[in-house]
Amino acid sequence: MTEWKRPDNIPFPSIWRTFEGKKEINGIKRKYWVQDVTEEYADAFLGYMTIGLLGEEALCKYSKIIEDTQSEQEIVELWRNSLKEKLALICLTKNEKGEVQIVGGNFTFRAYKGEHFDLDIFKGENIRKVILTAEHVYQMKDIYTELNTDQYLTALGLYVLPEFRGEGIGVEILKARRELCLAVGLSASATLFTSPTSQHIAAKARFKDFVEITYEDLEKENPECSFPGITEVSKYLKFMCIRYD
Image (cartoon, rainbow, N blue to C red):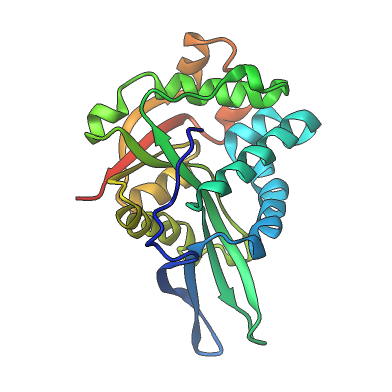
């Protein structure tokens, strides 16, 4: 990642979005907020992502990253490095005792025109396949021309803890990107969504389809991008984007 510095005039941490959940507990809907990821929550959220997202997100699950120690270490290092830009988002709430709980989050960071992942830095076979797949999709069409910008906010994983699902949290985290982007001088956001669930969430947050390809066609175009069994849960990858005008 190219070195980038968050503007000094933007407080860190900042709360970017507040909302109520959909479910009533004793007649009360839970309150949530989305803010910057701070050191206080970083290790715990990295743990949730490692245990949860690597076993559920389509590319990670069907490339079996969690069974490849080298790949697991390298993706955790990617997440940790993304925190340095101070652009990652975390959703929090308070339980009945008033204690803050992690609900979910998004390892967001800045993408810059002409910048690509260097496959040579990855030694784990399974993570290399995931990164190669992402790069293949990114190169299919010019996102920078589409968004009329030379940089945008992207991400390496959106995750909501199972006990908080059904509250619309994934949508709210994606919506929080708008306030974050406008504050730090970014005009757009784009991310690769790999399953029907994440694609539906993105569409509800007003992301539009930019590139769509089936996993079968992807493998035909690049045999290295093969994920046996993935079509049982997902037919398409979608590179989706949004401009904040």
